[in-house]
Length: 169
Image (cartoon, rainbow, N blue to C red; front, side, top):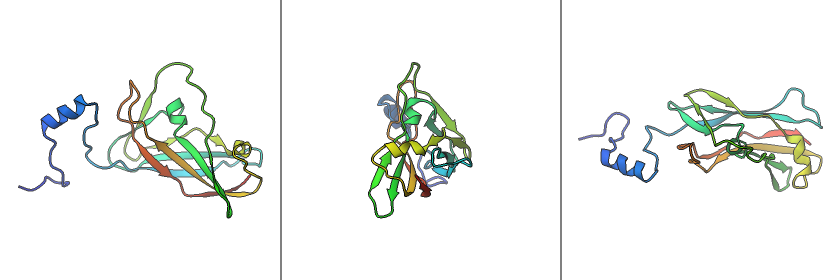
């Protein structure tokens, strides 16, 4: 007896009950294909104002749940690595305001849907980590290691890295 189309055997019902009882996610029908679709400097960039936008895309064929981009969990998922020519890598995490109330929330990205994350002003990175004025290669990193934070469960976990962007601080 061979595996059904797609190469996966059905999950036995008792195993599903056990996984749910332990609070674990059920096996998926395929890998999530979340990616950073774009990482770009805003059109009105100056040395004093370096707005960048990061756009995530669900390039897969199933829904992907992410932390809502404007809440604490979503805001702490995005940071940036700066590297000067021949220099060390400096990590910059934009400030995240404390939770003012409410609960964690998530958004669902349908297949081929995009999510625009809040714009970040990278000029603020100058005062962080001893970044001297100069040319840098910057990489956006979107990382989430927390799948569950009640009442939300089943959020995508993993790390994404953008293509590098060159900019001058």
